[in-house]
Amino acid sequence: MRLGSLALGLASLTLLLSVAPATGPAAAAGETGVAQVRPFPGAKQVEHSTRNFEEYWMPLGRLTGEAQAEKYEVLGGRWTHRSFTSPAGRSVAEIFRHYEQQIAKAGLEVVYGCKGLECGEGGRKTNNDWWPLSDHRRFMAARLQRPGGDLWVSVHVHARNANAPVQQELDIVETKPPVIAPPPRNEADVATLAKELKTDGRVVLRSLEFVEGKPGVLPASEGIVKAIAELLARDPALKLHVVVHSDNGAPAPASLDLTKKRAAVVTQMLTRLHRIPSARVQPAGLGPLAPVASNRTAEGRAMNRRVELVPNDVSRVTVSARR
Image (tube, rainbow, N blue to C red; front, side, top):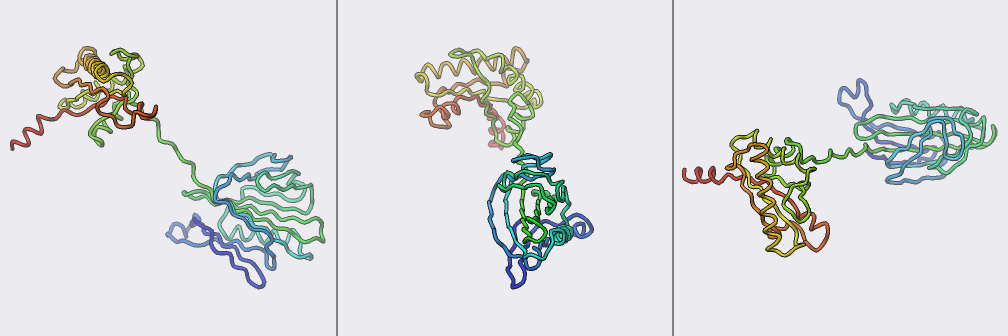
């Protein structure tokens, strides 16, 4: 998706908009093309601006005041604005008819259109203009739907009176599809643990929390322990080291001792509450001895406070090595 060239000839100005192929037989055949929206013959360009990203205010209903309309939509994307003027002797209706034909040829669907007094009175927020009530006004907003982001074109044709030069404003907005955030990571979901164990060779748990300064697991984290038990139940051959890490907020000996006790509490919950054989879960506490980030910042210390599930497959490796 890109804007094509703007060629200024001796008699007219041609605006080329590069767009994705429209739906229909041509699209079904895999053909591509360039949609062309040509300004009225003899029109003179008086303004041109482009913003790589703008929240464009597109009126889709009668204007009712400053940045007010019966219906509108805010479009996020690249905005190109061009305005033209035609000499007296041409009518608003004649010039607007030209743009209607251009929009139709380009394969865009007209979403909203108005003429004369039915366009209302007010100002377009993005364009920073004001429309007084007038019989000499035409407007339309058209859209081409595309998987990579819709293309919008608005055409505003108006004049002060029947004998005045006719002004034409073309606004092109190349929208971007909304960014869909991935679902939040749920450490109490056994499918999440299984996927990460398979792809990363370990699971890092950051929301398994303990009582402040004590070995006990907080009630809110018991669902994570249950998910670990389900992970082990799904694969009877799986054995895990349950490794508890800390930051350097306490002296190393005390921190090391506390993480060992916390790892033991987790394995005891697995064996006593969820009946996992003790031979399949081995506790380990490393205190602050294996940081993954700097302990000089709050963010780094938070990264270092974690519980890791590491496969205990030494027996398999030993058997393989002997062979």
